[in-house]
Each structure stands twice: as structure tokens, then as C-alpha cells.
Image: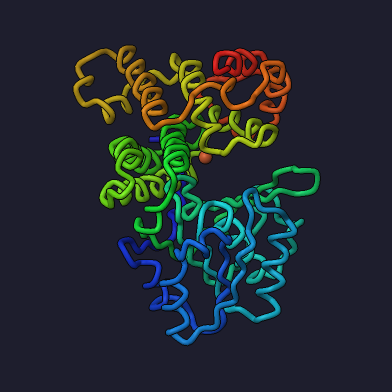
Length: 381
Ligand SMILES: [Fe+2]
């Protein structure tokens, strides 16, 4: 066995009402509660905030996190927390509020300057006690050591360090019940891509990330279409939320690759949602990888279709790609770039932009050069 390292995620509490149970765990003193306005307006934070207040804590509410949160937003959250002398941080919502909460807890706890910690492994201080509560089943941000912030000129910068990993995550599937179908589908596909790309990650794939990736794919693929068609099905919602969390643990340690690398320019330039961008590039990148990743894809195919175990690896590999492709369409997503306002003329520029994602491309099972990227965008168009 190859040597490997594995960073576990936060301590986990799961089940209906688990967000309110954080009141039994978190320290006393003022709480910086980081979220967004929609999450507050839908009443999703009510039970948790009431429980924290009943436990004697002041809630310092920061509810102005936007999609693709900016550096200004993060620094405003930190300033608010500092002014009130908060002793701990709760991040409540989708990936954006959780990312802001992770960095706010770190900057408040460590006293470090943001501009000194961009990149991998440079945040080495202590964060304030931090709990995360996801309200979408997709990003897995509550499990990961990564936070992404949009800086000057629209540049996305990330901090990736074990010092960002939350102390606790509460998985309460009832918080995901109101998600519209398109968001459920896109975030669910994103989580599936996390599992598949972690399982084939070229450099850091390891037996524990494999275990999480397999179980994540089993949970997610078994429930995605169900939650799209029966949004109130709590068992399926719970499976999606846990699956997204396990996929987050997998790709925290065995990072994502080509699908994400080609998806990022679609978000950066055409502002397509992250999950949708991944869904649009999934089939073509898997086809590009099929030869190099054949045995791994064949192994995953048996999770989606146990009957295919008796077939050869080439047939199984094709089964995986076919099943995932069908899942994208069955979830209700429209799977071609041309249907999402991406002009064909933009393809050379998208391919050039994708080449900037070398930190992801190095994890792909087979190289993706600029010419490959152009061909893959054409195929997805
Ligand atoms: Fe993702």
C-alpha cells in the first residue's frame, strides 16, 4: 500500500433538530452567526438561534453573505465579530456562508492577516470554536478545509488548510426540504462529481477517501432522482445530505480534477451555478478519462448497477458514464452549453481559462491540454 495521510472532518451530529442541539455543545459568550438573507427569511435559522439564545448567548447576526462572497463581506463579518468579542462562530446555509464562517473563525481566533494565508497550508493558527450547518446537499463545505473568496477584479482565491476544518457539523435534512428542483439537482450532481473525481484523483487517492467516495456515490445516486421528483421525501433528503458530506471528506483528501477545472470558467465568465457547470462538463470529461481511469470507473459502475459486475471493465466503464449522463438529464438539468447562453465563439477563451486551473488538472487521471479542453467544450456545446 502506498503511504498516505488523511485529515478527518468535523465531529458530526445528524438528524432532525440537530442544528438546535449545537446549543448544548458550543461555548458560552456571544456567537457570530454567519448566514444569508434568504436562509433567514425562510425561517431555517429560527430553531438554532432560539436554542442558542435560550442557552444564554447573544447572537451577533451577520446575514449579508452573497453568492461567491467577496473579501469585503468576509472582512465585515470579522470586524463585526471582533467588535462584539464573539467566543465562537456558526456558519449556516450553502457553501458561501460556510466559507465565510470558516475564514472568520480562523481570522478571529488566530489574529492572522487574510493576505498572508492564501494558498495551501499557510493558515497554521487556532480558529475560534466553529460549527457549520449546511442547508443544501452538495458543496460538502461543512466537511472541507477549503474556503473560496472573490477578490479584486473578480479573482477567486482560496485558503486550504486543516486549520479551517470546523469543530462540529450538524446535518439536518429538514433544512434542505425547501430547495427548488433545479438547485437540488445541480448541487446533487456536484456532490456526485466530488465522489467520482476523488475516487480517480491521480496523486492523493487513498483507501479512506475511496471508502468515503464509494459510500457517497451509493447514497447520492440512490436518492438524487427521488429528491427531484419527491422533494418532501425525508429519507432521500437525509441520504443526499450525508452523501454530500462524505463526498466532501473524500475530496478534502483526494482532490477533484478535470470536471471541476473545466467547470470553473463557466462559473467565472458566464456565472453559471457551480453544480450546473459540473453537470455540463461531466460526460465529456469522463469520456476523455475513460481509458486511463477504466478500472476505477468500472468499480464505481457496480455501485450504480450491481448487475454489471459480470461484464468486462470496458463495458462497466461505459455503464458508469451512461448512468451518470442519464442522471443529469433525469434530474431535469438541460445538459448542453448552448442552452445556457454560452456562445460557441467563447470556447477558445474558456479552454485558455481552464488551463489556469493547474491545481485541479494535476489530479486528473490523464492530462488535459488546452487543445483537449477546446475539444471537450465543443463536445459539451
Ligand atoms: Fe464542486
